[in-house]
Image 1 (cartoon, one colour):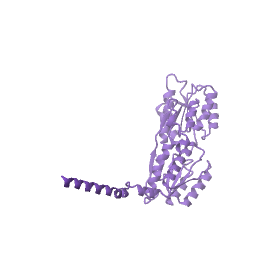
Image 2 (tube, helix red, strand yellow):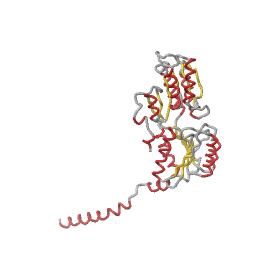
Image 3 (tube, one colour):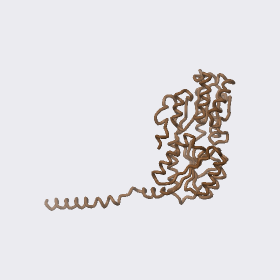
Image 4 (cartoon, helix red, strand yellow):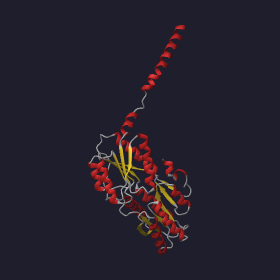
Length: 335
């Protein structure tokens, strides 16, 4: 018995003595490789304009990741000037970042420069607005689905027995923009499935709230029994909402749009300027893109353009019943 107790004591002491040595050797599988693959890399983002809420959300999340993992993140803002955007792209190609993120103004303008960037060996992520040139990755909306969601919302409302009419309006964005082209396809599918719906106006508001207001004001004069309006960006459609309120038709006309999920959209719903916003949650898009960026950096052996992936983010329907909390982020919450 005495010998057995001494043996246990000796073994226990040996195990305790060995613990610090074991702890020094513990390493989470893959962690060090991950950290080293991101450190000191460089990412350049060329947006449409940093004046938009979705752009501010994306950059807040990406800057947080850059600070956490030690890579450099630059924003080169052309401020809605496509010529400046092309110059920014050419400058980025010359600077050879590890990853280039691009928000396209339309499907054609940057197409050639994106091909040049890939031929130079730069991996490219397109965010939410696609070019006709497919690159390594696209992260953003399924815009055809968005067109179907908004068109379907108006079909349910304006084909109901108590609807004021079957008349609807499409407030487009920039006609050559990918979001506009694909959303219109989704709307066309809904119109084909519901031939009773009557599209009485299809005009571009160019993401401009004042232009949206003027178009809506004119349409309401031509069609005082208008039932619904669908648009492409909540910050523009508040102009349509202002025209509907001024005409006293807020209980008649349903306004449906989409947006990044900022608190301003929830405020517009509270004020009665908008009825439904399909929220594509820009912070979640940014997190998906951050995952893609880190994957690029972990696989420098894969040539630019050798793999082409697409990631569609989630969409949440927001109205007066749920315009609160996580459906209404602020920039300060993302930093």
